[in-house]
Image 1 (cartoon, helix red, strand yellow):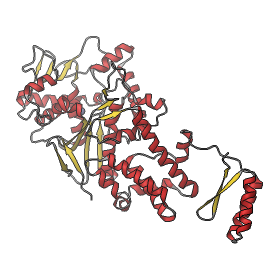
Image 2: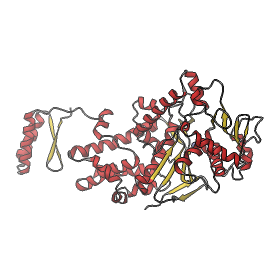
Image 3: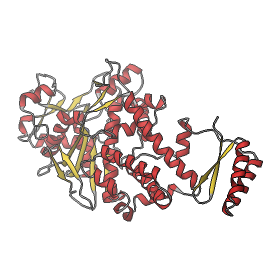
Image 4: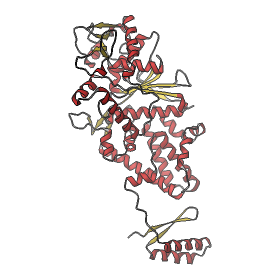
Length: 484
Ligand SMILES: [Zn+2]
């Protein structure tokens, strides 16, 4: 098996990835808080970890990777939005979750194996909080339960911040019941006017969990206390991921929690931070509604290395569309010349072991270098150029190669002709009169019999009727209208 090299935030180094159990890779990614449409910054994180998931499935086998991504369906932002809209929390979160699934499917992302919801894991959160209290890492105060940061000597190991930076960076609420300004909330009391579906019973009274405890509870429920890989946006590194580590390692003696931490970089729009106040806040749905296909959005999101900042611009979207149009027109040309080629059967091949070792090897090797997606896309372009310039068996090989590379990248998943049609790049089919078809057939026969003069005469006769004969490989031809 090829060795996967991943940058581990814990060590700030590129390391070779070895799962605890080579038969089952376990990966957790922080999912959305479902109160609004996913924006392209959210989409970047989902696409990056989808690409990593696809690569792991490729390396270890599709059944050997367990991918858990949570849904945060209890949160202050959700409570506020539901109140604004005068709907129940459940109505809001189930509608937004549906939007999220549809938008992410449009980006060709695979669903995770488990997608737990916070509200369905409250007893697991309470159990961890109780363990933290019992072990002296947390305390109850005025209806709240807080994690006591100075009780964890390893706190800060991921973000490597010092104490002052941590307190400032967390923008922690100063509250009289806190023993230390850095202490963070594990459980908070309910407000009297909260929607009943966001209020839960606990040993500390009615309330709801803090955000960080969710991920500790859901990862350990589905992946165990120790698992292989934890992903999320770089903005979650502190305090969210730092707090997850503190909660999980302090609640479970001897646990190291996740072994590899992967963080994707920020996304900007035309060089600026995306924000509602700047008016440059772009949702995935808006782009899809503007007829920018999900595949083009995915292409842009993979065109920059995942750890680097990515700038979204109209130009980037146009370039992605240009590349995809070019790929699809080459694929359509080939499929047009080989009418009986059944490309969906390639789908089965891409996950077969023999294939993983041969046809996609060059691309997998690039991805194994810390998920180098820009290099993988460059390889697709190189293959497209080779497809354009080749003939016969060579051409078939490059055609399959390009389709397979597309499958590894979650790209080129549309039917080539329908893509070109939707993009307005397909000339309308022309009715060729029967008489012209007959002349063309006679010309082919003349050509096969090497009656060149007769073949030339027939070509001129066809041209006089307004059509051009274009010879194709394998003694076939196409009839195209003469260009004015
Ligand atoms: Zn999380």
